[in-house]
Image 1: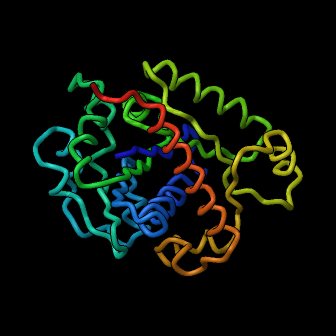
Image 2 (image 1 turned 180 degrees about the vertical axis):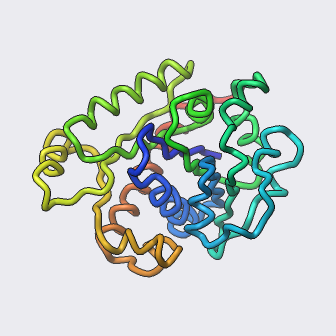
Length: 251
């Protein structure tokens, strides 16, 4: 099972929209058994899939070891795609992880899901603490959405340095420009500064995901946003294949 973390220390860059759409791409376009694990206490992924409010607040119990992940996982409306939802009980998850003293709790919980899923997508909160460190240690690859700004490269370098500090074997880190508006000169300057970075456009079809509460590929599959997300997922799959090919053979 490959673990794809959608992480940025900055909020408001579209992490949840990207994570939910990539999870859909994984299940529907690549036919992977996919689990979207929401680690943000706002429960954005549950809202995006119209699954919030169907359960008691108990996500914290998973980390405490009181219940198994299977007791919390919810099937989505799409074949091969499940959700491990969040709720407000995760607001103090960072301090809980510190009290537990288990630096790889998220990775350990992830390994318990390996027989059931091919891809685990992590929708991460905008934090830089013990929780983010655990996410980085669990990830096979880290996708970093960034706002289109001249400071984006600096912010990405900061994230990359933090990942190197938190992990013995840093996972590949892929920067991503989010919410690009080509009518804005600042956004065009950012694209020119890093032409190799993938980008997700700021378009109405992507904003409609939160209104319709479903991935853009289900209602506007030929729009620039849907095509950009599909290309992004294909790039992630290529990177995962490279990581798998480079991994040492057991024994």
